[in-house]
Length: 565
Ligand code: GLC
Image (cartoon, rainbow, N blue to C red; front, side, top):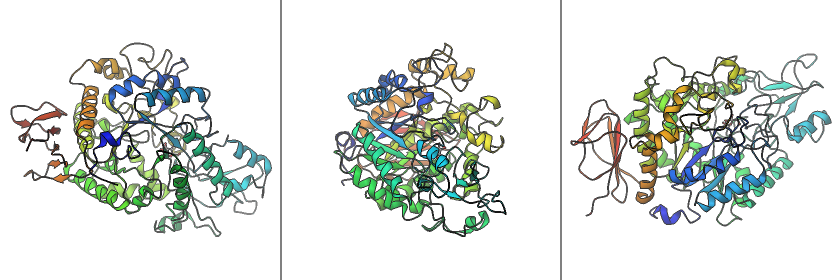
């Protein structure tokens, strides 16, 4: 595949995803059309012109399937339907059509590691009892102790608390996440067939791509004797670990790839795989899912050295897999980047990487990303300034950019949610020790007034703080200095400027200033420091803060136009 093809023509081809800007919608918190406090598909439909005006290439919809919301929709009760509170399949078709009419692709979320406990399969498993074919679709075991009343192992779930739950007849089932999310048994052929049917169902409806939830967890080696938690933690994650990133998970994705390639253009997929960076190319390879999230920037401070390491490393990984890289600063699982950058730096990248490198308690340790919203040390203005600079740098990089709803408004994490209004199972399963992810899932403010700031006509399912009003779409739309204006302008310019998937670093003479040039001469310069930097020569196309008088201010990014040679 050519890496020097310009992205605009590519947008109409099978390669559209390589440098796409993908906007993540968390449907329950985007727009509420029927006044029940929950966002829905008709709500999104009513905002497609907003998405087109923003200039995104694709929309990724977090789960909108029937769900009891034990984990914000990642507990799916039926993979081939729409939650009645969010609409109907006809609404989904209308939304897909409206997005396609505006040249926007549609990506849906597939959650294959676990179902909801309300899924018909799990209900059948409960009814059918020990040794049944229905239980074989999940991971059931006998307990320990004389009466089997102790869980099969002392493993801890990612959300805290035990990873096993006992059912009425005394057996236990395994769940990586909440107890309402029983893990599927991917040794069972029926499970494979079921997901192939689901992928085909959505691909046939015109879906362009899939985001694969916890893609590294599906296959397990649960042969007896099961290791203890301590033994599990001591095992290397090298493709043979019993629970994480096993080599044979790729066999599943090879099957899926064959299905994706039956379509024209082939359907795309992106893996959410929290694995060692060196193993990311397995998921991103064209014979596998084709692309994988790069979460490294979630772990980096606003720091030139860390950004450069992350960028170099991920461009190298992409060249190893043949995929393009992906950039992410915010999503529905982490504290919004305006807030992260408004808090004191975390430390080194290596420290941060260790915290998410595999074992349940360490993955849960990624909760450091989740629990930092409430700090009194938050520098709100500084956080937004650094977030704008980081975003403008990210949008100048080769590869695709994944944006999360609300970051275009410069929204901060909402820390002030009362305990009795929280929804995230992380909060409950850790008995409040981790505040969880609700703070980045608060419904968007569209207007400065109204019962839910234009989100809908009723109180939203998570409360919006008063300060959201100042960041409403309506308010920011008219403000040339707003973060929304910055995103709109940057995304439109990016379309014109996008070029081959390379960059060349330039000398800046300062450790805290990064500068790179793209193949067409487009230059991106970020001053991470606290002192101004002389603005390099060239036409300023856009900047994340006020540039002028030959100065690139502290904590600011600028794009410089390709120069005529
Ligand atoms: C992924 C999702 C997260 C969810 C978890 C379990 O990490 O992004 O929101 O809680 O998987 O499905």
